[in-house]
Every structure is written in C-alpha cells, then in structure tokens.
Image (cartoon, rainbow, N blue to C red; front, side, top):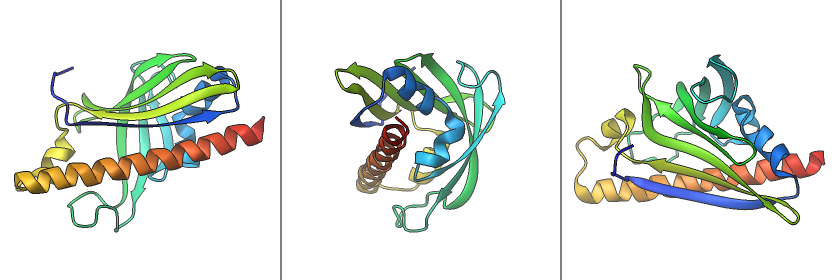
Amino acid sequence: MSSTETFRVAATTDIRADPATVFAYVSDLTRGGEWSPECLGGEWTEGEPGAVGSVFTARNHREPDVVAWAPVVRGDWTTQCEVVESTAPRAFSWAMRTKDGRAQESVWSFTVEPTAGGSTLTHAFWMGELTEGMRGILHGMNDAEVKKFLDDWSDKIVGDMRTSLARIKAALETAS
C-alpha cells in the first residue's frame, strides 16, 4: 500500500445480532443486492467464497442523477473485486481490481465489534492512489473541480453506506 490517501469515509450502526451472524451476512457478497444502493449482486468467480484472494464479479447500476455533473459510469456495468482481508468475525475487506486483474487501492470493508446488545458494524471505504477509473473521471479537471468531485463523491459514498447499514440492520434484526 502507498502512503497516498485520496479519501477515506465510514459509517457505523448498532445491530441486535451477534458478531458471527453479522460477519457471515456481510462477507457473503452475493447478498450485496439486498443491501447496496448500487451493487445488484454477483458471483464468486475465483477461489473459495469469502477467502482472501478470492474474486467476486459484481453487477452494478448507477442512476443518471448521481453526481450528475461528473463523468462517472452510469447505467449497468460489472466490476471485479478481490478479498484482501477475511478475519471472522471481525473484519472483511475487498479491493476493486484493474482491467488486467490487479487489486487497486480502492478498498471497501466491514468491521464488526461485539457490544452488550449485539454488534457495532462499520462500513468503510478507502482510496489510496487513484484508481484507473478515478484517473479517467478526474482527467482534465482543474484543482477546484477535483476537490468538488471528491467532496461530492465522498458524500455519495457515505449516503450509500448509511443506506446499506440500515438495510443490513433491518434484515438481521428481523431474522432474529
């Protein structure tokens, strides 16, 4: 990992479910369509599901009004990600991959902490060096536009994480 940090965001919620249950749910990326505003689901395409080094191919959809002024991918697309940490029942992380299959410094994660009433779940995103996609989006922008985009994009991601956490909480608390 590099020492560069483009941005880092996170959101947290408490869930009335034990850490093992929470970890099992969030580390099953095939269920992402149940909670994510953007990921429609997908399938494990390499390795053992949820294991470090395994690859998940996600189906995604983004509406036209998401950071509408910026040249981001809209509509349907797929992406590959690689599991970079899987420490049950505490931490699960995956990195977005380049077109040629290398993990990028674009890492999504769930961290689960035990509480008296169940668990605290934190959903986070970190970007170190710019990804190939982000370089394309920012190409030709001046410094003020880059700052505006990163601020707007961070707000979008935090909103998506809060939605995801609310859906995960509802699913797990309804199931128990």
